Length: 313
Ligand code: UDP
Image (cartoon, rainbow, N blue to C red):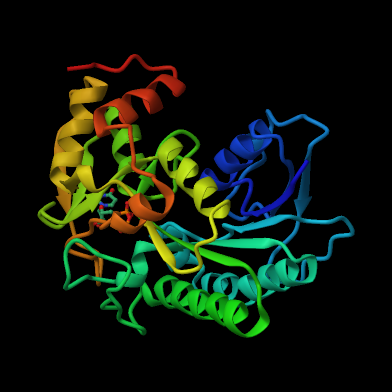
């Protein structure tokens, strides 16, 4: 039975990854300080093969047992969270990644870091291939997340080249689905709950900025495939088929929820990327991976988990 450590394992993606690994026969050690993760996300995991450690990864991670995989997902991934806790964001990306890499090196484990499309910043190349170096403002409000992840990638590649650690880098694009925190602040979760509560949907700016939305199950499948491959270079994981403007996303959510909410426009945050869509050629070639769940279907599945009946077209 392989043993996997999942940092950020009580978070949105982390908890889905724990589910997936347990189903695949892994023993899972979930490490989380519950800053943005929650015990609710892992409450259903009552197997002997699952262990929860309440630990902050900015402190060294010491484990007695053998470890085969380290999935380093701990991060303050939502703009609302990393702008509220900017130093914590820099620390988890730097010290946290250092400690997770140290654990992988000590245990001779395969290491996978959840990097982000944010390394491309406000991209001037569209869609974004892994070879694009990005357009990031290091001292802007998003810099505390973007630069932490860019540093984490540099650290990961250095541990690979210089220390021989078996590493993988997933550049994750916008992902949505069950267990996103109600107050996480991201567009998909805000819109879903605003629509369900009959409140106005808050579109920032004129809503012409785009994001490409990937359903969580597709993303988790991609992470697992990457972890079990022998790829060391960054791989984009996201859904290029569903690049939508934020106004279109709001309209789709209203349709799928059958809501009577209206749309209101609010100020656009500083340095908000105008466009974002992954080029997933590498993921297709190296992993044979591509997303399968389309946007309306994904939103419908999410709604079902909230006890609501989706309106299907
Ligand atoms: N956004 C919005 N309304 C909201 C929350 C976010 O219009 O209630 C916009 C935000 O300005 C950005 C896009 O939606 O252009 C995606 O934001 P999100 O926080 O989901 O993630 P990001 O891709 O910016 O990290």
